Amino acid sequence: MNVWLQPELALVGVDTDARSLDGTVEPFSKMIPLIHMNAILAATGTTLFAGFLFQGCQSVGLDVDKLSAQMPKILPLVYDRMVEAIKMAGMRFAADPAQSSAVLVGWSAQENRMIGNLYERRDSRGSFVCTSLPYGAYVQPGPTDLRWADRLLNLPEPKTPEAMSRLAQEQTKIIKEFISEIAAGGQFIVAQLTRRNMNIRAVCEL
Image (cartoon, rainbow, N blue to C red; front, side, top):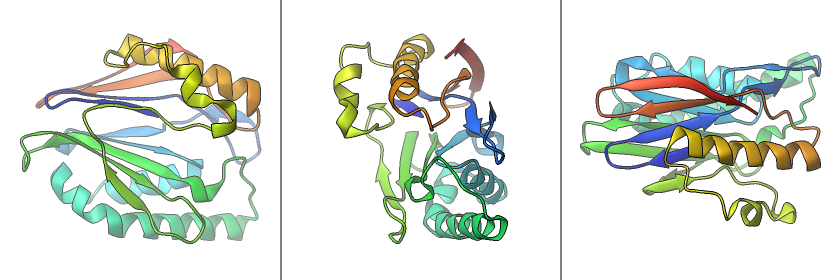
């Protein structure tokens, strides 16, 4: 999950491979368009977290500003529903549910510019931490012991779908080589947002 944010433009990119409940790797939508507010919501972690989050945000707020204000209330409820579903079904996940995160990106009528918020749950007890994304690139963090940032250092800024796809290809290569239990790959999907328009397309295979 990567983001390029500018006052008049935003890009959000995700892959599509995810591990299903029976352990097989299958395609899954890791972001959804909130068409009525010209915004994109993307998530990482387990497929259950993403599914519950997408469902919970579909009917909240008329615009991205109102949804942003509600996210601190929505996220803990979504997380608790996910944990309960995992317990009831006796499921196991390769991804740590405590590492669930999400980004909300869209045009803010209140601020008259593109905004992006990152929501992270960093442990099994703490609440979600909200960070306003600065202009520029947000690159999905990776394990520090793999020198993740160093491996991505010489890539071009992900300010076009094609440049972001190069970043995603390198990220996927690292994950497949060193963290095989995490599903990564499939199609690389990029959403491009402007003040009044949204375009979503598959840029490449990972």
